[in-house]
Length: 389
Ligand SMILES: [Cu+2]
Image 1 (cartoon, rainbow, N blue to C red):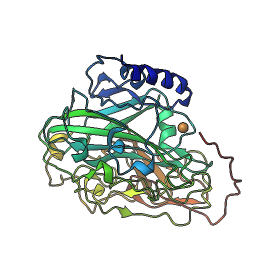
Image 2 (cartoon, rainbow, N blue to C red):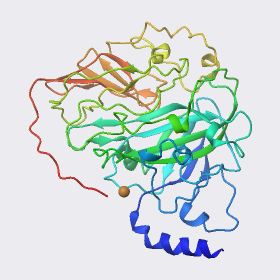
Image 3 (spheres, rainbow, N blue to C red):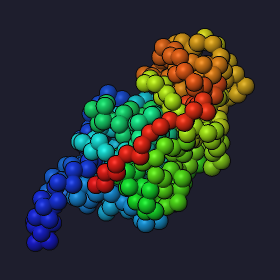
């Protein structure tokens, strides 16, 4: 070990109280892979070969918005590609598990893919073009600073499941998974990005080649989902980054901006999740079914590799009323039934219908986020004390 590394060890030991996190374990289609244990492997002369990318972020720290145009934002500071890749089928599941996460570091959890166009083990990260495949943002703003995707992640044993699009072409991809902590984001450059990357080898016979965005062009410090005060009631939260890609759609940069109208009085009861409008995927309806008909299952890759919508799919058939049952393909999507009840796509199935809270209604239809319109009554919520870490 070099002297400088010894010095780094001592410094890192002194700053362990920081207590952020990193992805310590990855499950890909049922097989578990080790993450890059930065507080251990960085100091080893011969660390194990992994699907995970290495970094030198031994402080468990973050990348700040002032570095959004630097390569540090791509796969964390000083990152290098993993030597290995995990095979995954289209429609397969990747479960990213963090070693820990501080519960006051609220914010979105976002995941992207980028085609390496060859091996990922020696790819130039600055050339990778990422398309978003999964995103969770604000779930419920009843109690400031709200319930966020990070809180879901903590509740799920620090993990999040991500579904690989069913129609992307086979090849080697970098999966970029990221938490953005917003507890200090009311200040410009106060957000904290914690990106983590792994290598995947997507199998199958997909043909889709979604357009992507360079890592250094994903965000700006003034993005509405980056520069935001979560310590006051939020009428809508826009998940940052390019539009969510969903199988069967063509990914474009034109996010259908859905802005929740005057939600300041969102007087929801527990269970009525307020996820205010954010990324509405313009092409997402192509795989929705109407009424009680099932939606094509994520594992049904043969019918979804085609660019032509299948029989149960029509861009005009997005359900707006009636209880849905059976399978659904867009995990975590919401379905607002006629404005008065809602359901969610959980583990590939529509869950039980729940009534909207008194005085609220949702915008009918299926979308990534449930838009809730509140009665005109304002909530009387005092401004919560800030906690800064
Ligand atoms: Cu912190």
